[in-house]
Amino acid sequence: MRAFPQTIHFIGSNMPRRMEVAIRDLDVEGQIPAEIDGAFFRAVPDNAHPPIYEDDIALNADGMISRFAISNGAVDFDIRYVETDRYKAERVARRALFGRYRNPFTDDPEVAGMDRTVANTTPVWHAGRLLMTKEDGLGYEIDPGTLDTIGKWSFGGKLRSETFTAHPRIDDETGELFFFGYEAGGLCTRDVAYCIADKDGALISEQWFDQPYAATIHDFVITGKYAVFPIFPTTTDMDRLKAGGAHWAHQQDLESWIGIMPRYGKVTEMKWIKGPVGVSAFHEVNAYDEGDLVHLDICLTASNAFPFMREAGGIHIRQQELQGALTRWTIDMSAAQPQIVESPIGPPGDLPRIADADQGRPYRKAWYLSMNPQGGPPMPGGPVGANFNCLLSIDLGNGRIELLGVPPGAAISEPAHIPSAETGHDGWLLTVVDLPNNPDPSQQIPGDYLSELWVLDAGNVAAGPVAKVKTGLPLRSQVTAPG
Ligand SMILES: [Fe+2]
Image (cartoon, rainbow, N blue to C red; front, top):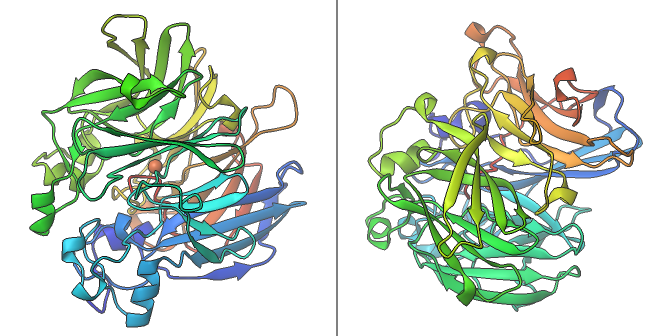
């Protein structure tokens, strides 16, 4: 194709922008708190070239890294492509050479065997190293100053896994990076690598195990004692891929599983616990120990949240009808055969954020995105086709919810959390909000919007932003979903 398709994966906030920019001193309305000093990195997908196939999806687009650099209330903004092997090959060819999402059998034969990852899902910062990640390959190291792509990061050649998750977990006290890779031994394998890097970034442990079926494992959690692998029945199949089909299909009649092992233990100590049939989640909020109990907080849905993964599995549920809730699974590890006890703890939603210091520990506050039915129509775009329109703050002690909505037709992206030095202060949130140029929902044109960075008091999100930073540009939706 020489033109972009006009499907949901290429309109609205998924419209190809392909802008590499460097802007100094963005317009700031309000006052950015002085203690916010540093960089907010975002991963966004943005096709450098029209796709080979009309039915391409947003998750298959080239990764870009963007950075809001904030100091003394001033903000500079940059976007650059991640120069993956794939991006460089297509740039030379001036066209797409790689075919469908995570299906190498649909590629142009001239790129057979070349690394396909687009590094478009999550920026990961650990031990002074910035990685752009996507779960189908290794992370790409980026120079945090210039945003130049340095190259694939394999822990100095030590990592055997072919893949690295977009959602590792860092223990804030020890500085260790806990991570995994699935399809670690190659396409459609059940191999999962569970790994630990020390606070200096050195790989100190890599152990492999088999998961119950070849599922996407987008996220996992650690507690003080355990590493916890939630497995949901969205599976891959080599025959389907060879026939040119989808990488993922949800299987509504299969059980979910929890794999749980001591976090410094051996994978042979893994206990497998059966979970509910057909459910799905892409993100866990957090997990922690309470004596022998393990509490695991999940953005759970009754089926897969992605229409194309449901449809590939023959499941026909309209997006608005998908049921879900912020859900706690509690497991008593002292039981001979531990079971999952499930309780809903909050409204449905996704893209959760907690304070880094709370990772794996008892915690009080979390923030996540949701859809407010009273908030007007959602902005088209994003990986599922409709963007979230509100941010929720939940107090897990008393269940209290606060809501920050955006105007009708606007979109809000996954927030980042910045701790405050002030005792008792919940810190700050940074989130990108996309605002249609026409406030009247009946007159809005998909893709006609400008993006702002909102700075929020994390303890009072309902009050709205303390500062708005205007990019003057329509930015692409973050991926923040399965890569
Ligand atoms: Fe994600």
